Amino acid sequence: MEGEIVVKTKRVEQGTLLILLVIALIFPLLSERYMLSVGISILIMALLGQSWNIMSGYAGQFSFGHAAFFGLGAYTSSILYIDFNISPWVGMIAGMCVAALVGVLIGFLSFRYKLRGDFFALVTLAFAEILRVLFNNTKALKGATGILIPYKDAWKEFQFANDRIFYFIILGMVILATLFIGVMSRRKFGIFLIAIKENQEAAGSLGVPVLQYKLVAMAISAAIAAMAGTFYAQYYGFIDPTVVFVSSISVEAIVPCIIGGAGTLGGPLLGALVIIPLQELSNNLFEGINGMNMIIYGVLIVLFVVFCRDGIYGTVIRRLKGARS
Image (cartoon, rainbow, N blue to C red; front, top):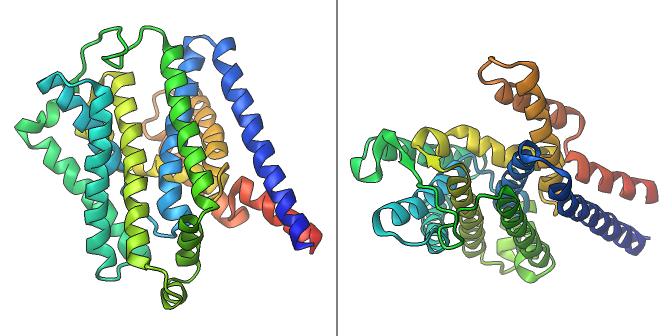
């Protein structure tokens, strides 16, 4: 019976991902520019969600500071491009490395002193705020004026006149991140992360190198968030600390996982697919009301935490298991 449940769970997961992939591939062929921008926003949130999912969904270390890594990716690639004429593609890799190193530093300082749960969340939030203030007040880092990225329609410059190219690039990033997490979750690394999430002390007593695995998860999570930051900078063409280091970015990493299902492969994708259209709808219905998207995020988080704690995908899996028990 347990084997049947596992098979059904895998079929649901594979079917969900296949349907989402087909929708994602067809969508840009049938969309105008506005709808393409909505699709790109969905994929950026999905990528951010997948980055948070590794650290918090699988390893169980709740982060509220992913804006730090997102902003580092955006600023590293942009500064290298503006000041040193280094291609944003190279800058993206550099940004991922910088974010991973910062993630390891934050993780080491936190995990070494056994900070978990709310305390770890506050530490990550504090680091994101420190970076926002630092970048906002440092002239060498462009300060509060931010960075305006000059437009050049060229692959080397990571700039395209056709939004469909941007769309397929971010889609490729999401697919790569999802495939990586899918492979990871079925290997020793993913199994150990889940063990750490369920019971860190028990995992450690069985020989799992807890600190090492949590730091690696932190580095991978930070690097993927930085990749999303670089894409954001190149797509929108302007960044400043109040855009890429703000807590709303961290919320956008968390919400799709809560809505779709944290610790699941398809959860962040489903969550992003729900959130962004709702956000666009609310912006049109409540035009002129600042912060409406954050209000919607708050209401949805409360509703899902109370009535659908495992998210959309997690709830389906739980009901499948319940039907067989």
